[in-house]
Length: 148
Image 1 (cartoon, rainbow, N blue to C red):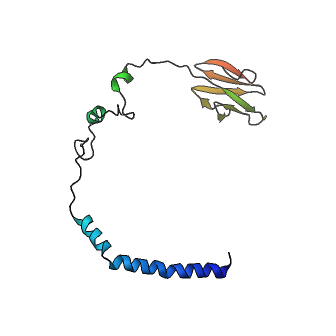
Image 2 (cartoon, helix red, strand yellow; image 1 turned 30 degrees about the horizontal axis):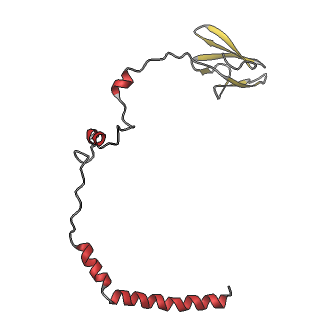
Image 3 (tube, one colour; image 1 turned 45 degrees about the horizontal axis):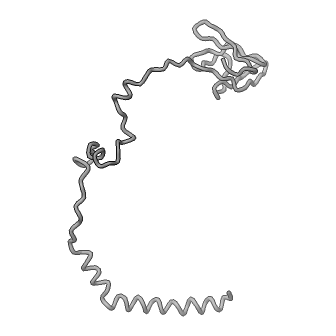
């Protein structure tokens, strides 16, 4: 579109928009609308689901048919949950071997000799294995296996 035609369209619609707004305000439609909005209109009664400001009555929500609150823990079910005694696991991700400062990646963390990971102390890092010690018991993680 040529700039001249665009200017003609813009400048011809602008006075029409101003004339429409003048007619709209002068006809009194806005004044009547203001009277309607300022008058007190009764609101439909809605059930109050909370006891006081800032607190929520969860029994009312449960009775409303929405079910229980997913963010509130059920104390009874949590206390009856079985306790699983998991022994720590070490996964060897890689070895960065250097004679002066060898490093290893165990459980996605970079460790060196003397560091502790999951309760085990890193004793020695070789080219293909890492020796860990826990409770005076030493075990080796190999690159071939990757797990203890």
